[in-house]
Length: 139
Image 1: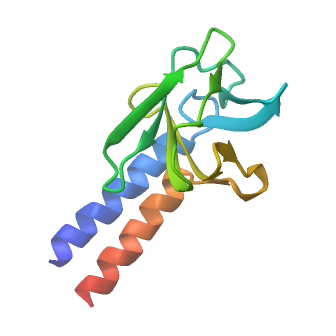
Image 2: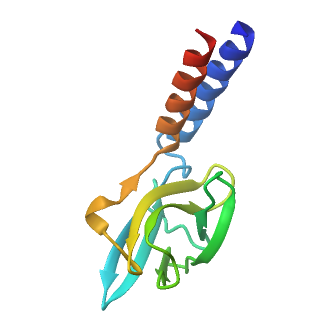
């Protein structure tokens, strides 16, 4: 079990280093705001370029892709309609391709997102949480 833990630790460290390295367009940063009553998502790569053509979707509880809400335009923006979404917390994924993803934890109430409660979940924190979880199971 220790070799597996060592492999996972090394793999996660390499992946996190590759994603978080400056100068590359691997990180995506997204923001939500209401404009004229519509919810708009704006997303850019860490180098400032818009993440055009990124798929915006809700994830299923098991982490698999769920409902596609739209794709970003050339400016990295898309308007989202959540009127048909039941109240609750959802994982929103902005998928610009392999290694180009952002995740937002969004609370939806009556078709609107409570913007002051949105949480951005960087991949590096998810990897650290996974490693801590694996380590606890091994001890």
